[in-house]
Image 1 (cartoon, rainbow, N blue to C red):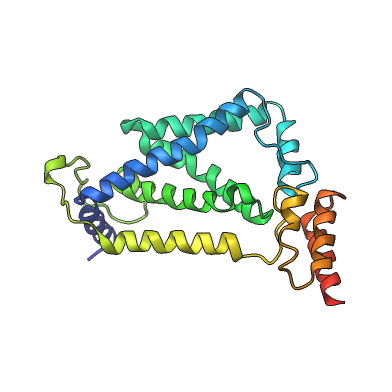
Image 2 (cartoon, rainbow, N blue to C red; image 1 turned 180 degrees about the vertical axis):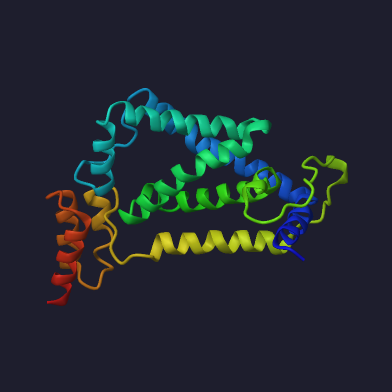
Length: 238
């Protein structure tokens, strides 16, 4: 049995389940809501966060805000991707436009340890991947192996299996839990959004003084995250 045939069989089984259909709709709506409002803010030329420029993410967003039409184009693409996800005939196009944007946001959020999207962006990446997989028959012709006959994409609602896919949603819950745990406990030190919020983690830190130094380094001195972390580790080693 070819790889393409196996994928077709798995996809057919999934598309015959009513709950997975509803989950695909939920993902579409969630992703659209996640991109359209911030995209509109960019198109209007406004800065969409109140982060200080001393914050690693705030510094990046401030620079991005001053890039002129590049900033506007990002907003246009976000709104376009979100709107396309809401239109049945253009969902897969919207998903493919959406993916590189949200993947970039996810990597950026993890790199600078930004609380605002450290949790949501990985979940949005997973939701986006689900939609891409859900509409696999639409784009499978670009894959480098033999293709069987095209599957029928539309199935009547009454014909869908109403059985709740416990294993699938257990996997979804597990993935969600893993992302949450990593977002909360994945890094020893977090810059947080403000100096006061950053300092709330210091009393529970192994070295409170080093923690306070780290927070001042970020929010008062405006140093880079890496240099502040280096300062923190040096102070902790004393």
